[in-house]
Length: 106
Image (cartoon, rainbow, N blue to C red; front, side, top):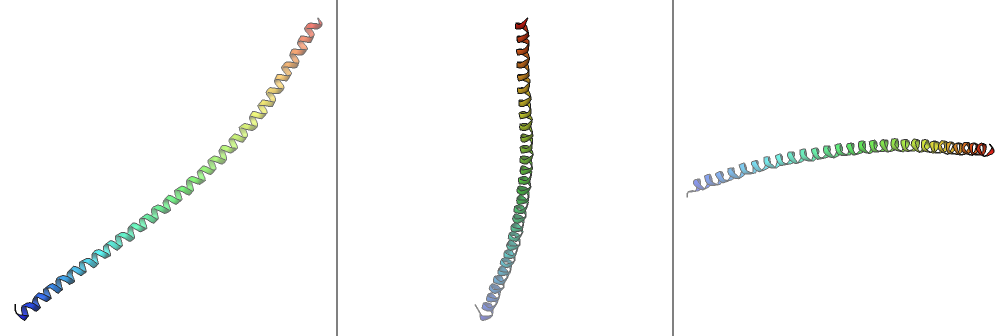
């Protein structure tokens, strides 16, 4: 192999290495862009999930408050009903006693 052939061979190998290096750099850049895009998408998804969790928490709190109000109102109504029922039973008992007393007096 002559010196010129050796130089040509070296130039050919060098050019091949340079092309390979350029392809590798472009591939690395593409991988970097893809990674950055995926990271951004992940952060957007996390943000959306956080928003939904916060919104759901607020809805749960509102529902819980509404339920507590409903239970308290029904509890008051139950106690009012219980008092009225007690008075009615007492009145019926008193009426029965008066009726019994009148029967015995006759």
